[in-house]
Image (tube, rainbow, N blue to C red):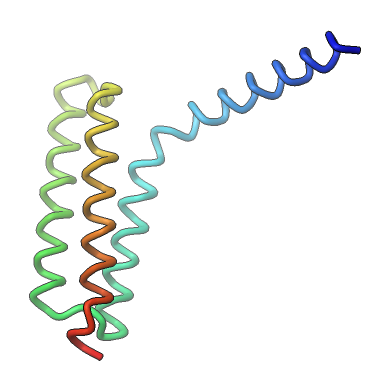
Length: 107
């Protein structure tokens, strides 16, 4: 019984890891799209000023340029270190979007 449970758990972990690795390349693109949608929503509902929007868009463009450059240097892929750095930068941008949308300048 104990071996059967371990086998099921090991199988589930293997499938979970395979799914996680197959989705990882799209994670950066998904977050980029999500953040663009959040900026657009802020513009539409008036929670972002034009200057805040311009600043956020500039930061997003710089990050996208950096990702393209890193991928070009590595044959189309990012190293694990670069992925971690991009994740940190996307987190900072996410926080900046939140702060700008909730700073009360427009409402």
